Length: 193
Ligand code: S3P
Image (cartoon, rainbow, N blue to C red; front, side):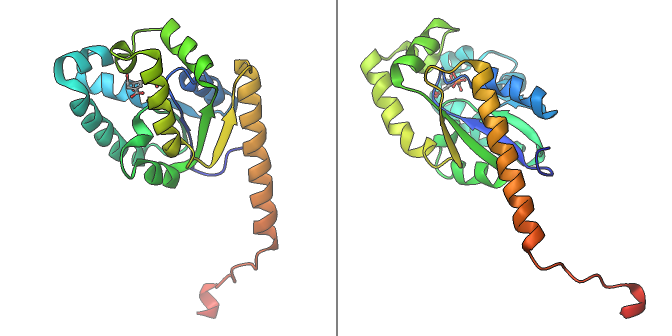
């Protein structure tokens, strides 16, 4: 159903549910699912907290830059990005050339509760709750550039995925209607040339 080889790219703060939404969304759309953090982990052969501990954040961000280059080859995928991935200069613009970028938004309290409940996140380890909230505020400027912002506060996984699928279908229908109204490209047969 999803148009051609365009991808669906999920962005958002830690705890937004990008991985779980992405996995289920990919199943619903019949697309492959890829996570930028998984690509980095596979490349380095170690988990993200270890990369941060041994090489630091600057090195991790460089890896994210390399992964961004590789995403050009991942057409027609559902991509879940790390929370800081679209915040590198120019990253959001490039992501938007790959497909539909969706910001999974939520109020900070919801995100923080989810992010601190699950596995250890180096970007939260050395920060107070207030500092993490400030980081979210700064990053919102980047997330806001997504094609679509979806407030997931209070929504379960199925509800979020259903809304995304509905949005993509509506958009594809609208595009189909526009294409149908557009003048047809004339067909040139060999005999006419
Ligand atoms: C990060 C978020 C993490 C991971 C890394 C850095 C960030 O991904 O990429 O720890 O800077 O917000 P999640 O958003 O999946 O937690």
